[in-house]
Image (cartoon, rainbow, N blue to C red):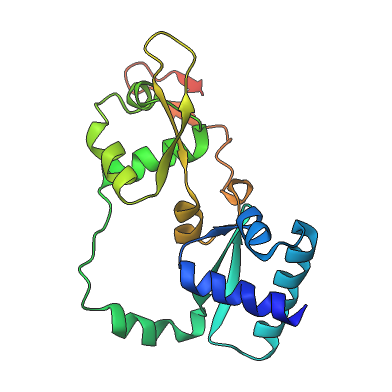
Length: 182
């Protein structure tokens, strides 16, 4: 088991990005359940030894990252990299995709009431969203969904951790004082 744990740690380090558990299982030639146990043991060992790194899970993938308590040091290292913040349009588009996925660009544009080519391309370039299929309608439009990079950047393991947005909103009409609930 110790060899498997060290192999997993080496694979996660070498890969850098999230690595699917099935891929780890195939490479190690060990069943998925044993890989899951090994990863959980490794996570516990790294936590108890106050290791500078930790393993996080995103859906069925795992990634080796630095611990939050060492953020200031990593920040110093990365401070020379230019910041590429998302525009409000990109954040709005990403929110729509996160909550409505899978969703087409036309559906996004209908919600936003503006063209969304730029924000969608930006999100694709950054790896925050990905193509997840095609809608079975004329033209076969692309369906978009969030990626594992989205999960990692927002510090969540799966989409069920997104805040709930299903709440009643009272909108007061200023023109005649009527109230409408959406």
